[in-house]
Image (tube, rainbow over all chains, first blue to last red; front, top):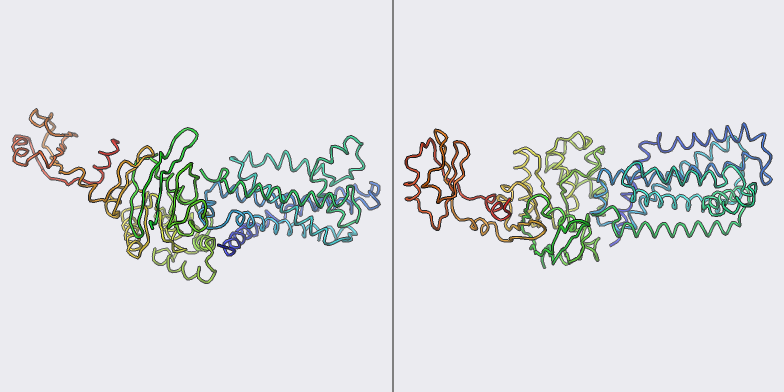
Length: 254
Length: 299
């Protein structure tokens, strides 16, 4: 039984949920990125030499954009699903004939849309301050969509696992934020000492930021294909994990 | 083919065996009651049927569809009215139904028609634009019934549907679900109000400590405790006289209740035995389901 209407209804609900509070879901990451652009790029950036042949402002913008996308996608699924669990209205979905993958797809679709809106917002602000040139639109779209999907899936897994608001924040605070800041948003990995360069290569967000930056400037710290493949594998891996968790009803069903 | 067929259903939690292998079959169009004290396993059974809990072992089929193998088809057959309010309290009444029916694959146009119909039938149409949180307890119950019916399920499962509602609302809910049953919907009801089960159900299973201790028609269950009770209101408080100790007598202040077994207690003897008591008022009561329930569960 294909229930595409059901899947689209759930996606619609999720989309309306974040659009209803756009001042809380769309605007803050754009403001944060604008501040970063003004402080690091516009103000301090003029004192920093060119990185990899391009201005510092142009260098950090792809990373800032990816930061906004990552957090928006993650926050959308994690907070929505956790609150649904908390208020028990997730039961409306659990008793419905929606396939497990359809539930995940609907939640993810809304998260990707939110991430794209945030990304577009940051991009518009960036064009006001920097001389950005889009090098490869396909690479940009590939990374922005695939990374949104990865973190939407990660948000779903976290919301299923978490049993309290404290636990909900553990991953965002202690894993995603540090890995993002250390993922080459503000610096090129080649600026690091050799030992730290090796450590940095274990950070998957590095590949996401680097790959996305390639879409603008046409060069990357690591081979672009490594990044493309890693991102694809992470989508498959996290997707499989989410479907499995729904199938066994992990912390969803008694 | 039974509407609901449960075979040897077990549910084991880490510290408790909630269901110890229950089996029962509910026929299409039946109004079936599942009764039992708190923690007996009623809600666990319902949650397994509806996909809110995983079974440990056993088989559950809904109109021949396995609840795990064919979970999508099985869930499309069921409408659930859960015990606790589980809708988004900050959402409008109309939207709650609009989204819930969408999950069942109902087209947008058909949804609008059905929502209006069910909200009017339940007297909630005027509240359609209100947020759920602003509704009274009775209206919230009705909203959950509306939500359960919006996809026109073949089986309606009601878990304590009238808990915490006033008498008038309760009666209107009874009338509504009785009508649904007459239209062919199979109904499985759990309730703490035994009066409710007595009023509505054709067959009843009583479950306790995860086991079905009896399953029979309501009439047969009521016959289990044949007899009547004689209720006496006394003018003054007394001790139970020695000649009444052969009966099952409960004395509560000035109220004396004598349970009579129709097979061995004869009215002439009873009336002779109560002569001399300072009786102000006397009445007889037929056994109720509640008595059967207490008798069977020893609660």
